[in-house]
Amino acid sequence: MSTLKIPDLPDDESSRLTTLNALNILDTEPEERFDRLTRIAKRLFDVPIALVSLVDENRQWFKSCIGLNVRQTDRNISFCGHAILGDGIFIIPNALKDERFADNPLVIDEPHIRFYAGCPISVPDGHKMGTLCIIDRKPRQLSQEDLELLQDLANMVGQELAALQMATLDELTGIANRRGFKILKQFCIPSEN
Image (cartoon, helix red, strand yellow):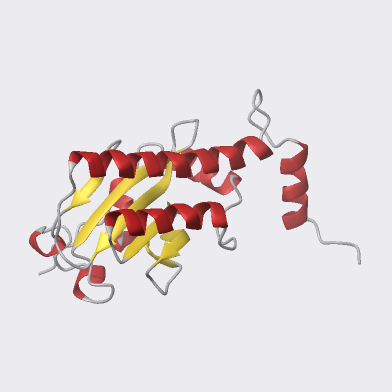
């Protein structure tokens, strides 16, 4: 009998998804500003996998992905879907010993997750867009200093997302500014060539 725990939806799910979609970041190409932070996390914590994961309606999509050959997974099996429900770092020291995850396909099969630590990434309006997470194939613990460092890196990712938001939205009204309208036009109106 499966004990897999599907992540609950945050109370602000509808407005959270609206904010995420307004960032126009989903399904975009990798960017050095995010890849730099996952590289630092991978080296700093000596883990094989580090991700900037954005939690969409039905998936978690990786804006930056070091150590995996996929760009997304189903939200129902995601660890990050659980992490965005809280304010602190979500830690699973040994997924095989945690009944919520022991029969998760990401634990049983590739990438054989044993350790997971995900820090929610928030934008200025408080919505959690996803996580900066580190993953290992062996159980482990983090020290208080490690937790603080992971939080610092996640805050840096949040600042990058906030910069995207500020670049496209009017601060007073919260609607698209000139740059935001140009981006929307690029995606919504066919060019006249």
